[in-house]
Length: 312
Image (cartoon, rainbow, N blue to C red; front, side):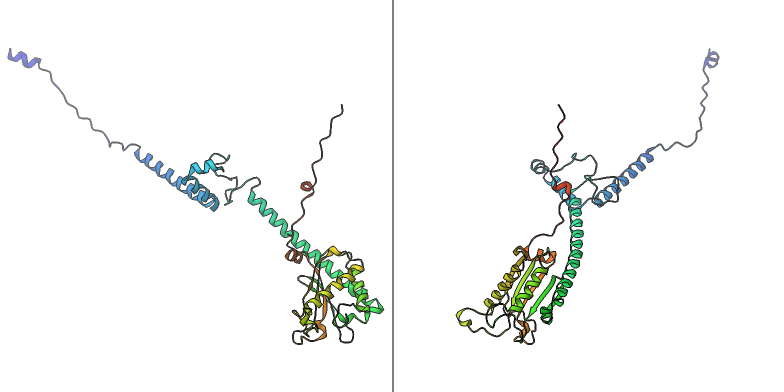
Protein backbone atom coordinates (compact mmCIF):
# COMPACT_ATOMS: atom_id res chain seq x y z
CA UNK A 1 0.00 0.00 0.00
CA UNK A 2 2.83 2.34 0.89
CA UNK A 3 4.40 1.77 -2.46
CA UNK A 4 1.20 2.58 -4.25
CA UNK A 5 0.89 5.93 -2.36
CA UNK A 6 4.27 7.05 -3.53
CA UNK A 7 3.42 6.22 -7.07
CA UNK A 8 0.25 8.32 -6.94
CA UNK A 9 1.88 11.50 -5.42
CA UNK A 10 2.11 14.27 -8.09
CA UNK A 11 5.43 15.80 -8.98
CA UNK A 12 5.42 19.70 -8.84
CA UNK A 13 8.04 21.52 -10.90
CA UNK A 14 8.68 25.26 -10.09
CA UNK A 15 10.17 27.37 -12.85
CA UNK A 16 11.42 30.92 -12.05
CA UNK A 17 11.03 33.41 -14.89
CA UNK A 18 13.86 35.90 -15.28
CA UNK A 19 12.83 39.28 -16.82
CA UNK A 20 14.48 42.69 -17.65
CA UNK A 21 14.36 46.02 -15.78
CA UNK A 22 10.99 47.37 -14.71
CA UNK A 23 9.84 50.50 -16.69
CA UNK A 24 9.76 53.89 -14.81
CA UNK A 25 6.41 55.04 -16.29
CA UNK A 26 5.34 58.58 -17.64
CA UNK A 27 5.29 60.64 -14.41
CA UNK A 28 8.29 62.75 -15.47
CA UNK A 29 6.51 63.81 -18.65
CA UNK A 30 3.64 65.23 -16.62
CA UNK A 31 6.06 67.16 -14.40
CA UNK A 32 7.89 68.58 -17.40
CA UNK A 33 4.63 69.63 -19.04
CA UNK A 34 3.61 71.44 -15.86
CA UNK A 35 6.98 73.22 -15.78
CA UNK A 36 6.69 74.35 -19.41
CA UNK A 37 3.12 75.54 -18.84
CA UNK A 38 4.20 77.52 -15.77
CA UNK A 39 7.07 79.16 -17.68
CA UNK A 40 4.73 80.04 -20.55
CA UNK A 41 2.27 81.60 -18.13
CA UNK A 42 5.14 83.55 -16.48
CA UNK A 43 6.38 85.01 -19.76
CA UNK A 44 2.79 85.80 -20.80
CA UNK A 45 2.33 87.69 -17.53
CA UNK A 46 5.56 89.64 -18.11
CA UNK A 47 4.41 90.54 -21.64
CA UNK A 48 1.05 91.72 -20.36
CA UNK A 49 2.67 93.89 -17.68
CA UNK A 50 5.05 95.39 -20.23
CA UNK A 51 2.31 96.19 -22.76
CA UNK A 52 -0.16 97.70 -20.28
CA UNK A 53 -0.14 101.43 -19.59
CA UNK A 54 0.05 102.88 -16.10
CA UNK A 55 -3.55 104.08 -16.35
CA UNK A 56 -4.79 100.60 -17.25
CA UNK A 57 -2.82 99.09 -14.38
CA UNK A 58 -4.40 101.61 -12.02
CA UNK A 59 -7.86 100.73 -13.33
CA UNK A 60 -7.24 97.00 -12.94
CA UNK A 61 -5.95 97.55 -9.42
CA UNK A 62 -9.00 99.64 -8.51
CA UNK A 63 -11.33 97.04 -9.97
CA UNK A 64 -9.91 94.19 -7.90
CA UNK A 65 -9.86 96.36 -4.78
CA UNK A 66 -13.52 97.34 -5.13
CA UNK A 67 -15.15 95.58 -8.13
CA UNK A 68 -18.68 96.38 -6.97
CA UNK A 69 -17.91 100.11 -6.89
CA UNK A 70 -16.51 100.00 -10.44
CA UNK A 71 -19.52 98.05 -11.67
CA UNK A 72 -21.98 100.48 -10.09
CA UNK A 73 -20.10 103.64 -11.12
CA UNK A 74 -19.76 102.43 -14.69
CA UNK A 75 -16.72 102.04 -16.89
CA UNK A 76 -15.03 99.36 -18.90
CA UNK A 77 -14.43 96.02 -17.28
CA UNK A 78 -13.67 92.44 -18.15
CA UNK A 79 -15.66 91.28 -21.13
CA UNK A 80 -16.23 94.75 -22.58
CA UNK A 81 -13.61 94.25 -25.29
CA UNK A 82 -13.43 91.82 -28.17
CA UNK A 83 -9.76 91.27 -27.42
CA UNK A 84 -8.13 89.52 -24.50
CA UNK A 85 -6.14 92.71 -23.89
CA UNK A 86 -8.25 95.85 -23.63
CA UNK A 87 -7.27 97.94 -26.61
CA UNK A 88 -5.06 95.20 -28.04
CA UNK A 89 -4.34 94.59 -31.69
CA UNK A 90 -2.22 92.69 -34.14
CA UNK A 91 0.96 94.64 -33.46
CA UNK A 92 2.32 93.28 -30.17
CA UNK A 93 5.16 95.82 -30.20
CA UNK A 94 2.71 98.60 -29.25
CA UNK A 95 2.99 99.23 -25.52
CA UNK A 96 -0.21 101.28 -25.20
CA UNK A 97 -2.47 99.02 -27.24
CA UNK A 98 -4.21 99.64 -30.54
CA UNK A 99 -7.70 100.97 -31.11
CA UNK A 100 -9.53 102.24 -34.14
CA UNK A 101 -9.65 105.81 -32.85
CA UNK A 102 -8.89 106.11 -29.16
CA UNK A 103 -9.12 109.35 -27.22
CA UNK A 104 -5.35 109.56 -26.82
CA UNK A 105 -4.86 109.29 -30.58
CA UNK A 106 -7.41 112.05 -31.15
CA UNK A 107 -5.61 114.33 -28.70
CA UNK A 108 -2.28 113.49 -30.32
CA UNK A 109 -3.60 114.19 -33.81
CA UNK A 110 -5.11 117.50 -32.67
CA UNK A 111 -1.82 118.47 -31.04
CA UNK A 112 0.14 117.64 -34.19
CA UNK A 113 -2.37 119.55 -36.35
CA UNK A 114 -2.21 122.56 -34.02
CA UNK A 115 1.60 122.56 -34.06
CA UNK A 116 1.67 122.37 -37.86
CA UNK A 117 -0.90 125.18 -38.04
CA UNK A 118 1.22 127.33 -35.69
CA UNK A 119 4.31 126.79 -37.84
CA UNK A 120 2.45 127.66 -41.02
CA UNK A 121 1.00 130.79 -39.39
CA UNK A 122 4.44 131.84 -38.18
CA UNK A 123 5.84 131.53 -41.71
CA UNK A 124 2.88 133.44 -43.13
CA UNK A 125 3.33 136.19 -40.51
CA UNK A 126 7.00 136.49 -41.38
CA UNK A 127 6.19 136.95 -45.06
CA UNK A 128 3.36 139.43 -44.42
CA UNK A 129 5.35 141.55 -42.00
CA UNK A 130 8.39 141.67 -44.29
CA UNK A 131 6.21 142.85 -47.16
CA UNK A 132 4.52 145.41 -44.90
CA UNK A 133 7.85 146.79 -43.68
CA UNK A 134 9.08 147.25 -47.24
CA UNK A 135 5.73 148.80 -48.23
CA UNK A 136 5.85 151.42 -45.46
CA UNK A 137 9.50 152.26 -46.12
CA UNK A 138 8.80 152.65 -49.84
CA UNK A 139 5.68 154.77 -49.25
CA UNK A 140 7.62 157.24 -47.07
CA UNK A 141 10.74 157.38 -49.24
CA UNK A 142 8.66 157.95 -52.39
CA UNK A 143 6.83 160.84 -50.78
CA UNK A 144 8.98 163.96 -51.10
CA UNK A 145 7.14 165.66 -48.29
CA UNK A 146 7.72 162.79 -45.86
CA UNK A 147 11.11 161.55 -47.03
CA UNK A 148 12.93 164.13 -44.90
CA UNK A 149 11.32 162.60 -41.78
CA UNK A 150 12.44 159.05 -42.55
CA UNK A 151 15.17 159.29 -39.91
CA UNK A 152 12.45 159.52 -37.25
CA UNK A 153 10.83 156.24 -38.33
CA UNK A 154 12.36 153.00 -37.10
CA UNK A 155 11.13 149.73 -38.60
CA UNK A 156 12.16 146.48 -36.94
CA UNK A 157 10.84 142.92 -37.12
CA UNK A 158 10.80 141.44 -33.61
CA UNK A 159 9.64 138.03 -32.31
CA UNK A 160 6.30 139.69 -31.47
CA UNK A 161 5.80 141.31 -34.88
CA UNK A 162 6.69 144.39 -36.93
CA UNK A 163 7.57 147.31 -34.66
CA UNK A 164 7.03 150.79 -36.13
CA UNK A 165 8.45 153.56 -33.93
CA UNK A 166 8.02 157.25 -34.67
CA UNK A 167 10.51 159.04 -32.45
CA UNK A 168 10.58 162.70 -31.53
CA UNK A 169 13.29 165.06 -32.63
CA UNK A 170 14.41 168.23 -30.91
CA UNK A 171 14.01 170.17 -34.15
CA UNK A 172 10.84 168.37 -35.27
CA UNK A 173 8.57 167.45 -32.34
CA UNK A 174 5.60 165.21 -33.12
CA UNK A 175 3.22 166.99 -30.72
CA UNK A 176 2.92 170.42 -29.23
CA UNK A 177 4.94 170.76 -26.06
CA UNK A 178 3.07 169.25 -23.11
CA UNK A 179 -0.04 168.44 -25.16
CA UNK A 180 -1.50 165.75 -27.42
CA UNK A 181 -2.02 168.09 -30.40
CA UNK A 182 -0.56 166.39 -33.48
CA UNK A 183 1.87 168.38 -35.64
CA UNK A 184 0.91 168.66 -39.34
CA UNK A 185 3.86 166.58 -40.58
CA UNK A 186 3.07 163.93 -37.97
CA UNK A 187 -0.54 163.84 -39.18
CA UNK A 188 0.60 163.22 -42.77
CA UNK A 189 3.00 160.56 -41.60
CA UNK A 190 0.32 158.74 -39.60
CA UNK A 191 -2.13 158.93 -42.50
CA UNK A 192 0.43 157.29 -44.78
CA UNK A 193 1.04 154.50 -42.25
CA UNK A 194 -2.70 154.08 -41.71
CA UNK A 195 -3.26 153.50 -45.42
CA UNK A 196 -0.53 150.84 -45.43
CA UNK A 197 -2.14 149.07 -42.43
CA UNK A 198 -5.62 148.90 -43.95
CA UNK A 199 -5.17 145.51 -45.63
CA UNK A 200 -3.20 143.85 -42.82
CA UNK A 201 -5.14 141.09 -41.05
CA UNK A 202 -2.95 141.13 -37.93
CA UNK A 203 -3.94 143.00 -34.78
CA UNK A 204 -2.08 146.18 -33.78
CA UNK A 205 -0.85 147.39 -30.41
CA UNK A 206 -0.38 151.15 -29.96
CA UNK A 207 1.80 152.61 -27.17
CA UNK A 208 2.62 156.20 -26.25
CA UNK A 209 5.93 157.08 -24.53
CA UNK A 210 7.40 160.22 -22.98
CA UNK A 211 10.77 161.22 -21.58
CA UNK A 212 11.50 161.42 -17.85
CA UNK A 213 11.02 165.17 -17.53
CA UNK A 214 8.19 165.80 -15.10
CA UNK A 215 5.02 167.36 -16.41
CA UNK A 216 4.14 170.85 -15.28
CA UNK A 217 0.68 169.95 -13.96
CA UNK A 218 1.79 166.78 -12.18
CA UNK A 219 0.66 168.23 -8.87
CA UNK A 220 -2.91 168.47 -10.26
CA UNK A 221 -2.96 164.78 -11.20
CA UNK A 222 -2.00 165.11 -14.87
CA UNK A 223 1.40 163.51 -15.44
CA UNK A 224 3.43 161.81 -18.14
CA UNK A 225 1.15 158.79 -17.80
CA UNK A 226 -1.90 160.75 -18.88
CA UNK A 227 0.09 162.64 -21.51
CA UNK A 228 1.40 159.44 -23.12
CA UNK A 229 -2.10 157.93 -23.11
CA UNK A 230 -3.60 161.06 -24.71
CA UNK A 231 -0.92 161.07 -27.40
CA UNK A 232 -1.55 157.39 -28.11
CA UNK A 233 -5.27 158.09 -28.51
CA UNK A 234 -4.54 161.07 -30.76
CA UNK A 235 -2.46 158.75 -32.92
CA UNK A 236 -5.31 156.23 -32.97
CA UNK A 237 -7.70 158.89 -34.27
CA UNK A 238 -5.32 159.86 -37.07
CA UNK A 239 -4.90 156.24 -38.15
CA UNK A 240 -8.65 155.74 -38.20
CA UNK A 241 -9.07 158.93 -40.22
CA UNK A 242 -6.77 157.35 -42.82
CA UNK A 243 -9.22 154.44 -43.12
CA UNK A 244 -7.74 151.85 -40.78
CA UNK A 245 -10.61 149.90 -39.13
CA UNK A 246 -10.86 150.36 -35.38
CA UNK A 247 -11.21 146.59 -34.79
CA UNK A 248 -7.62 146.13 -35.92
CA UNK A 249 -6.45 147.77 -32.69
CA UNK A 250 -5.92 145.30 -29.86
CA UNK A 251 -4.92 147.91 -27.26
CA UNK A 252 -3.99 151.58 -26.82
CA UNK A 253 -1.68 152.15 -23.84
CA UNK A 254 0.14 155.08 -22.29
CA UNK A 255 3.51 153.90 -21.00
CA UNK A 256 4.80 157.24 -19.63
CA UNK A 257 8.57 157.15 -19.20
CA UNK A 258 8.69 153.53 -17.99
CA UNK A 259 10.37 152.14 -21.15
CA UNK A 260 12.89 154.68 -22.46
CA UNK A 261 14.37 154.08 -25.88
CA UNK A 262 17.67 155.50 -24.62
CA UNK A 263 18.03 154.25 -21.01
CA UNK A 264 21.40 155.98 -20.62
CA UNK A 265 19.80 159.35 -21.35
CA UNK A 266 16.18 159.24 -20.10
CA UNK A 267 15.61 162.91 -20.94
CA UNK A 268 16.57 162.49 -24.61
CA UNK A 269 13.94 163.54 -27.21
CA UNK A 270 14.03 160.05 -28.79
CA UNK A 271 12.32 158.69 -25.68
CA UNK A 272 9.24 160.65 -26.70
CA UNK A 273 7.80 158.33 -29.29
CA UNK A 274 4.79 156.43 -30.61
CA UNK A 275 5.18 152.66 -31.01
CA UNK A 276 3.01 150.61 -33.34
CA UNK A 277 3.37 146.84 -33.14
CA UNK A 278 1.77 144.75 -35.88
CA UNK A 279 1.56 141.56 -33.85
CA UNK A 280 2.07 138.00 -34.99
CA UNK A 281 -0.71 135.49 -34.37
CA UNK A 282 1.26 134.04 -31.47
CA UNK A 283 1.62 137.48 -29.88
CA UNK A 284 -2.11 138.04 -30.34
CA UNK A 285 -2.74 134.77 -28.51
CA UNK A 286 -0.58 135.84 -25.57
CA UNK A 287 -2.13 139.32 -25.38
CA UNK A 288 -5.80 138.54 -26.04
CA UNK A 289 -5.93 134.99 -24.73
CA UNK A 290 -7.47 133.65 -27.94
CA UNK A 291 -6.17 130.13 -28.66
CA UNK A 292 -4.41 129.70 -31.98
CA UNK A 293 -6.02 126.49 -33.26
CA UNK A 294 -6.51 125.22 -36.80
CA UNK A 295 -9.96 125.75 -38.30
CA UNK A 296 -12.31 122.83 -38.52
CA UNK A 297 -12.31 120.83 -41.71
CA UNK A 298 -14.93 121.56 -44.30
CA UNK A 299 -16.64 118.24 -43.59
CA UNK A 300 -16.90 118.99 -39.87
CA UNK A 301 -17.89 122.63 -40.25
CA UNK A 302 -20.43 122.29 -43.06
CA UNK A 303 -23.87 121.02 -42.05
CA UNK A 304 -25.02 117.74 -43.49
CA UNK A 305 -26.96 118.11 -46.71
CA UNK A 306 -30.60 116.99 -46.48
CA UNK A 307 -31.47 113.70 -48.14
CA UNK A 308 -32.97 114.03 -51.58
CA UNK A 309 -36.67 113.22 -51.73
CA UNK A 310 -37.72 110.58 -54.16
CA UNK A 311 -40.00 111.61 -56.95
CA UNK A 312 -43.66 110.64 -56.45
